[in-house]
Amino acid sequence: MAVDTPARIAILGAGPIGLEAALYARFLGYDVDVYERGTVADNILRWGHVRMFSPFGMNHSTLGLAALKAQDESYVPPADDEILTGLDYADRYLLPLSQTDLLADHLKLGVEVIGVGRPDMLKGEEVGTENRADSDFRILCRDSAGAESVSTAEVVIDTTGVFGNPNWAGEGGLPAIGESAIRDRIEYGVPDVLGSAQAQYAGRQTLVIGAGYSAATTVVALAKLAESAPETRVTWLVRDSREGQPISPIIDDPLPERAALTSEANRLASGASPNVSFQAGTSLDSVTYDEATGKFHVVLAASAKMFHEYDSIVANVGCRPDNKIYQELQIHECYASGGPMKLAAALQEANSGDCMAHVSHGPQSLINPEPDFYILGAKSYGRNSSFLVAVGLEQIRDLFTIIGDREGLDLYKSAITLLK
Ligand SMILES: Cc1cc2nc3c(=O)[nH]c(=O)nc-3n(C[C@H](O)[C@H](O)[C@H](O)COP(=O)(O)OP(=O)(O)OC[C@H]3O[C@@H](n4cnc5c(N)ncnc54)[C@H](O)[C@@H]3O)c2cc1C
Image (cartoon, rainbow, N blue to C red; front, side, top):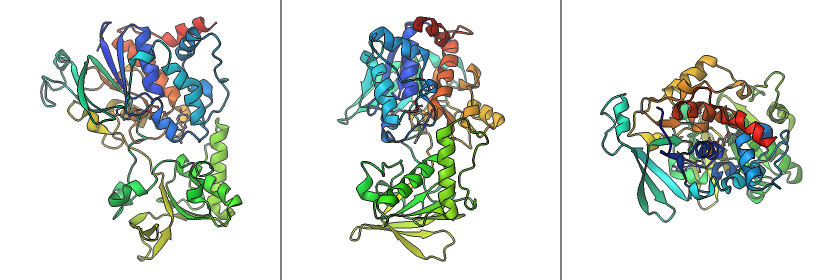
């Protein structure tokens, strides 16, 4: 719905898309509050040691650069073709951006959003009507000391990502037997095995589960670690029976970093390293952790109940959106991806495996039955992991044509002249 300035827009999450959306809104004259449960770029900093696939030119907006240059003429951005680590991306772009005058006073860091509702309207009332917008949103928050508070906003943009909400590692997406009880012992992120986490993995046995780029990154790093710590062993488990080729190569991949990772991971899976053993077509049946020995006992599905011992388990099995935030609102979720339905349907129709081929699907794809509540960024893709920052920037541009009620509005285009 169109919302005139100076309305209050609450943005949930200070990742790249939350920050860029806040910036766009500030340029248009909206009051903005950005709620972030951790620190700026918190999720990205969790995999900060990993080199990104997409070059910096795809990961920033012209508006962001214009704001940074206006703040500090001496600011030098990374080159557009530079491939940054997550940490560099945060340090050299996202953090300085968050400290510009346009954003700094609008960030509420260390504040987790617990839920968003309408004070005068329950989920089942005024079904799908714009009357729901008569009542501002009520945002329930909790700070790092545990204190709860409530704020309000006319528009809410949920950009809380998915990285903090990993999938389960067991068969059928359910927890393996015993997994829930030891969830905090299993690593669901991408550990820095060549850096800060090296001692935990060098010379030890690790089970890596998953068939995506994160699992590939972990396996390739562990194989590299084995060059200096030859006792290091990796068992790489994937659910599909893709013998020796867990990661499907993209023909003429335009992202060389991704192509190199794919090729090295598939080489390792085909038996190229004595330190890596690849097992396709099976998954985790049950797992326990022995406090006395510090080892995991693992039974694989269809392995005649033989158990295996590991020092660590890295489950790179994808992530899902946390829909608790909006469970009191009228959000139509896709029954397959868990993302908002209109966008999920457009993605399904476009059906492109390569994230580089993805584009925003236009303003209409961002509209939910709940007026003025929008889901952008990685969370808008639900369990689909092919989201790129570049798509999120297009989503922001599209969304503000609705909120600002100006068809064709494109501050990114206007900002190009500011940069000249
Ligand atoms: C290893 C790895 C490599 C990647 N490489 C690339 C790449 O090369 N190029 C690319 O475009 N993308 C890449 N991605 C995907 C990338 O993570 C996303 O494109 C990008 O981070 C999405 O931004 P976002 O703002 O939507 O979400 P996020 O970056 O996930 O940010 C969400 C923010 O919301 C906060 N938050 C969560 N819940 C709450 C809550 N309840 N209340 C308040 N705050 C909350 C989080 O702390 C976080 O700061 C990669 C991902 C991984 C895991």
